[in-house]
Image 1 (cartoon, rainbow, N blue to C red):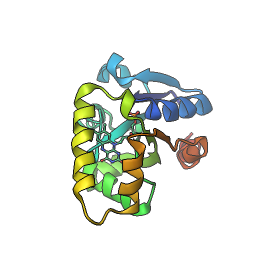
Image 2 (cartoon, protein in one colour):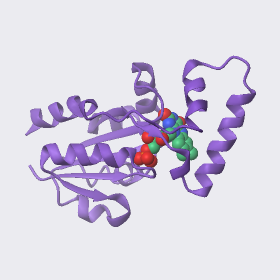
Image 3 (spheres, rainbow, N blue to C red):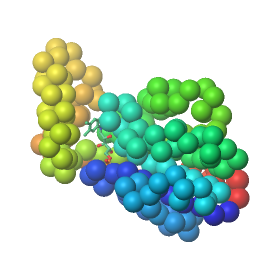
Length: 175
Ligand SMILES: Cc1cc2nc3c(=O)[nH]c(=O)nc-3n(C[C@H](O)[C@H](O)[C@H](O)COP(=O)(O)O)c2cc1C
């Protein structure tokens, strides 16, 4: 089965997961910036990875906007975010990014990435600074928010190769 892993990554966390998956599956690895839908149509299995930005999966429109063209192919999307991988987070991200109909065509996974403020571009730095102040002004911060605030001064990296296990097993079950 011809397989491709496509990713969009700003600070490298999604890239790391995409590299691990492509290596394990001996699949081609492509950056979203360099491709269009015609390239994806050459593959039987398409694995897309993007980071969460305000709960949206960055770059996933290349999949969502082309679901008709991609019909009959195996499609997997994974998102990475700073939030811990709780069942509630995963279902929230999945349900807010994909309709019930889209979920029939797309298998979704969430992997915890990390956060490195210094690697962000200016716009994202501004957005994340606003979020920082919003969290700072809150009276009762959750433990996740406390952890996130700490990550502004000390980058955090929660990437782990073993997080990809379930996705890899799913792919192998289709091959
Ligand atoms: C503007 C912005 C918004 C973000 N929103 C979320 C979010 O809603 N949920 C989350 O878990 N992480 C969020 N993050 C953190 C990133 O998703 C996380 O750092 C991710 O692992 C980055 O992956 P990348 O380096 O491959 O881009 C946000 C980061 C930025 C810059």
